[in-house]
Image (cartoon, rainbow, N blue to C red; front, side, top):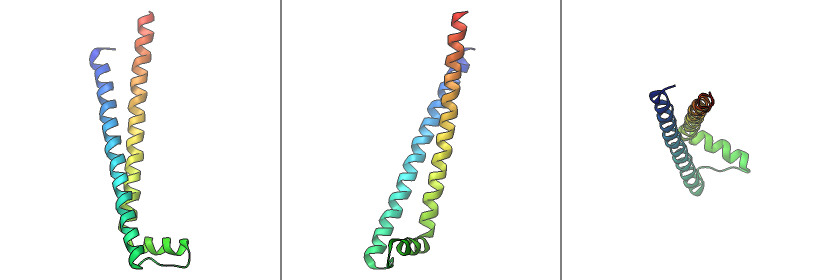
Length: 104
């Protein structure tokens, strides 16, 4: 265990955290874009139906690309969270090894 190994683990954690933040922001933006467009279409009457299920089906039909963008952004966010969790586990492993080495 050397300084470079420790530094690399923390650098990967930092990069993963930034990637997670960016992915979360993109997911938020995709959801906002969808909701704004959905609200606008509701107001114009393009999205209509007797009940919420019918309105949702119509919205998905009209706004397919926006729903797909939200799904893709959420998938990217989940992948980024996994990468962050894995980087965090590596830092914890390095810290545990350092504690173990310092006892000996």
